[in-house]
Image (cartoon, rainbow, N blue to C red; front, side):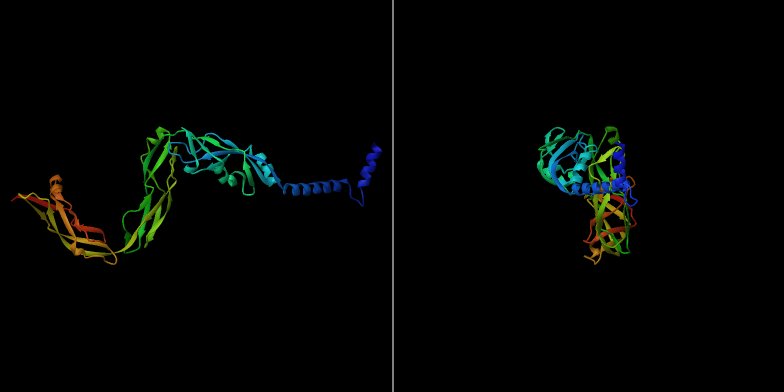
Length: 323
């Protein structure tokens, strides 16, 4: 036996090369063979563990259970080996819109083969061709969760180019959002805030998307809002406008001091109408409700295109007398 081994070792030696070269060559040939075969396409059954996510009002946004999805697929040997190893990894999270989940009862919702087919690339990857699913219907449980609706308050930093201003307030959509969490968390939340919306040197209308600030222990049904603001160019026009009393009983007379006010109008450019037609009034009811007998006039009529106005003075003294 020893003589035979010596002859084998001797036969591997040629021109100074020993058996190590032979082993390396054999290993290289095996590697090439293995890579070639793994790159070929095969047909087989692949299994993936899956969890479902969805924003369902009154429920958690992730399923409390997972399901195994089995499908006959055609793919390379690499992907088949990868699929075998994937069973030991965390489940694949697939997010569905509300219309794709069908209610069964209470906390249980299900999906069908149609929804699975639409999510095949997320489950198995882009390089896998699914021939058919063995899984027909998958059931997921979304436990109930305490929730309530609160308003969204925009946090903003705005500035405008000279002679430009916002036409109305910044608008956000949605202006309220459903929040989820434990009761002791929700009791302390009566509103949520956006991330800072910073718009500087505006000279035209603007729109965009802003995230909602996260709150520890609270889940938001919406993660962002759409905002918009209408910006217009304006001109300033000063006028002296009379202030009169309205809704005064026939047997009384209400005098206003001073009887005229300097008004600075900010109007859309180009000017749409004459501000001389503007009118400011003080209502008898406001006078009665006022303890100081001093009132702030309100517009009785503002021409189209007036964005803002400033009264000087702002407060007027009223005297009521009998006729």
